[in-house]
Length: 318
Image (cartoon, rainbow, N blue to C red):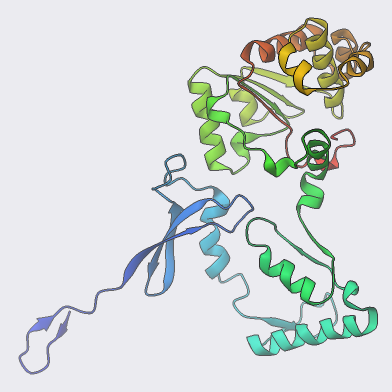
């Protein structure tokens, strides 16, 4: 309180302006809906958007760290230009105009020497790539890429070869699934809040889950079956499942006859990929492999087979 001029009476101070701003998180490519509390023009709190029926106010550790990303004193709060030899840790502060002119000058030097194709630009990916793509195109360069090149490119190309669209064209109906097969996809520790909640909802409704990994993770602890597989042998496990599905007629024959080609070739290709053969490759008992194939068939068509992320670093992931 402060005194009012002239009459000695106290009057309230100007209240701090606090408002809610609905946005989406930019801390990873998932882009979860968020609600940000803003006071006097400064973000002071961030949480999941409570209007989102699935996610609610939940937010992962990356999303919560958005405030530190913006304001932490350990992070640069203004442009810095190196003032000493590379690696010396010597920097000086610069204005935005100076920094932008500096970067533009360096780009012009590269373009003058190598042409526009001498410039490559990579970003995080997600829904906001129109600006970066337009920028590098304006420089005369086709060299744009993002983290997908190393994150899940094999999964992307495999999906295109089978279905005609890439991995991002898939929307997994996890919450309504009757069986979920996760191959190295540690859902409960992957910082995707909505997907993790849908997974737990499915388990709560009685869905089965087979988790295949070399690691005993939190997701493994929630799964109804955990197959601790030998590294780089996922392919053998899947070939054996295909072998069993074909051998025991566990597939939808009407669908296959109408829409699929090459079934006889596939049958011949996996003829020797028996559960016993796969057990020797993977370390997973043959009985467990047979049980997996039968569980998938029994739960069809409400089955999710998730190919995982970061599998572009796996030689057999395609």
